Length: 264
Ligand SMILES: NC(=O)c1ccc[n+]([C@@H]2O[C@H](COP(=O)([O-])OP(=O)(O)OC[C@H]3O[C@@H](n4cnc5c(N)ncnc54)[C@H](O)[C@@H]3O)[C@@H](O)[C@H]2O)c1
Image (cartoon, rainbow, N blue to C red; front, side, top):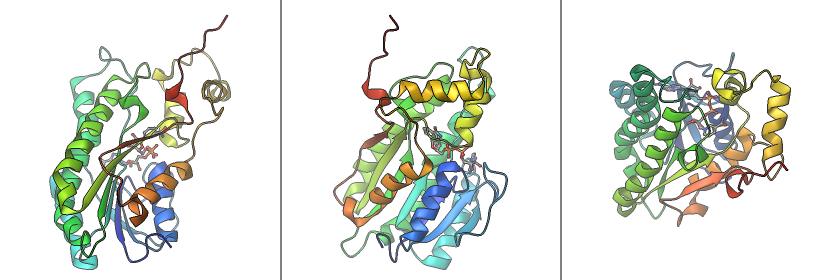
């Protein structure tokens, strides 16, 4: 088992990608705290999986402090923090209200900042006796290149990328590695709402047609599953990744490697 004896906290831990990460960490032997707004997160129900639910709104500093107090009292240290909580607003800047803009940054950027800040004392305890602690943030391929109609989301993910590098520089000397996962399209409730939302540019297409169109544009002719993401998160969390820090790991089936095909 790759994470035997380690303690992990995953924000957005009851969302589509978060659940797959939590499940993988549990299979690898970790003690896992799944932090989210509700026990169900972005899905309609949740069966007990052996993780410990922590109610955490990542926009609230008091919640971050309370969550880390709980982990500290119960586990004594933290080895792995995954900042997977996120929201996506499907609008251009002209359509986006200041409130929506601020909420996007509150969850995606402030949430990563606040949870990481208050996890650091416990992560330093994890980074002892030759093993490093690991923070894994969630960026996006949208932090490099833009999908139309996702302006605030793209801006937040670019900020998470820059923050990841800054945190890696500051906390590497303490034995804390910091990386970001940058997924392309992954089949979760967030992607489903993109297909059904106003910003999808669907123009009368059915969801099946939209999904096929998205698959077709990928070099690998598919989009990702939460388990695809959890595989890389698991490796970055493990001691095998002891030399990996400060990087933005794109997992997108080759999508961002290609120029758009001309339709002749
Ligand atoms: N699905 C994709 O295609 C995709 C692509 C690129 C990046 N991402 C990123 O991956 C991460 C996970 O996304 P997902 O697809 O699993 O989405 P999701 O909507 O299934 O899950 C997100 C989770 O975050 C939680 N959350 C939202 N606001 C919160 C808050 N204030 N405090 C705590 N939790 C909160 C939700 O309850 C939900 O459980 C996000 O950061 C997202 O931006 C997803």
